Each structure stands twice: as structure tokens, then as C-alpha cells.
Length: 115
Length: 115
DNA sequence: CGGGATCCGCCTAGATACTG
DNA sequence: CAGTATCTAGGCGGATCCCG
Image (cartoon, rainbow over all chains, first blue to last red):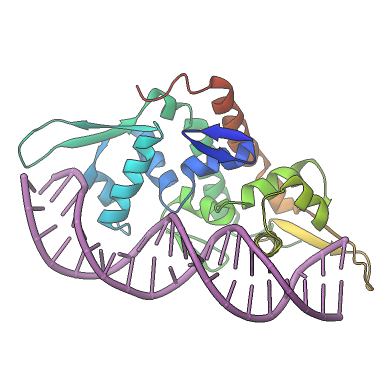
């Protein structure tokens, strides 16, 4: 049994998926690899996500220690930047691997499928 | 926009997650890396999954061309073996990366978290 | 600008019983 | 042995409106 942040997982692979699984988390992390981004910059990178969902996923990633949220202003308009933590940086090879395989599949144009 | 098997994804990373995301798919794939397994052997490796869910996830992985299902008998008791396809084999580095990070996190005992 | 509040649909996954 | 059938709950994620 594997444990992280109070949650239990039956397999080392499911622990990782518990942290980066779901529809949007890897996409967020993927965009944060290159540089820190503001909330609205993330929205522009991910045009189909809703505000609520983006907000929830960011909060979840922050709770798991993968990203950090830095607020630069006290009065509106707010400026908030999201970036990977040191711990989040250890995930970069995993995210890259996931992203690269997606690119590989697209390039292969399904030539290897269903044999 | 990225496409595979009739589904569309907004990011190369989400394409991959669309295929291996969810609570159980990576766990199944992880166990199939080493050797082909029968249905009940998979159940023993994953004691907490329900029959129905295992069945659904196997079917989904098969539809996506990642695993193949081979039936060895026509009369009950049936013998069915699941294994990775050639296409599924291309995922092994990704699954390994995911699994290794889970092990890494467990070993680190949360020493890098939330800085 | 960066969210929170509210409401809601749908899908994932569980529990249990049953079958070829 | 390897599933299917049925029912159900909970959570993920969407839509919309609102606020400091």
C-alpha cells in the first residue's frame, strides 16, 4: 500500500495517477514546465476549461505540493502567478514522457493500431 | 487539436491521459508489462477492484488498441489471456516513468513537500 | 483580475447477484 | 472461469452569476 498526503493507493502507478490524473492536471503541469503563468494566461493556453474547474484543479495541485501560488498585489486587479515547486519539478520527466507519447501517437497516425 | 480513436483532445498530454487515465488503467498496464495475465490473475494483483470495473477498463483498453484479449477455450471454464499489443508496448516507458515516480515519492517520505 | 457560490448532469466506479 | 446485469452513489467537471 502506498500513501501520500493522507490518501492511500494500491499501486505505485496509481499513487502518481492520483496526483496527476483527471482531465486537466497534466495539461496544467505541462504548461507550467516552461514558465510560470498567471491564471488568465493558463486559461488562454487551455481555452476549453471552465473557470471553476481550472480553479479547483489548481487548488488540488497546490494542496499536493506540486505547484505554488504567489500573489503579487493586495488590491484588485490581482496578480497571481502559478509555478512548479521543487517537488513538482521532479515530475517533469513524467509529464514530458506523457506529452511525448501523445505527440508520437499523433504522428504515427494510428499506423500501429489493433494488431 | 489532437485526435485518437474518434476522440479529440486539446493537448498532447491529455490525449495520453485520455487513454491511460482513470483509476485503474495504468495499474492494469503496469501488471501487463511483465507478462500476459488471465482475468483472475489480474484480480489477484488488484484486490480492491470490482469485477465490473476491471471488465470495463479491460474492454476500454482493448478498444484503444493497447491490449489484446486472447481466448483459448470455447467451453467453460474459459481461459482468456490479456497482453500488451505492439502499440501498447510503446507505452511501457511512460508507465514505467509513472510507476517509478510513485516509488520515488514513497521513498522520499514527503521530505521535499510544500516549499 | 482572479477567482468563489450555486446548481446540476454525467460518468466512473462500487456492490451484489447471476450466467454461458 | 470470465465475465454480464442491475442498481446506486459520489465525484468530476460544466454553466452561470457574482464579488473584492
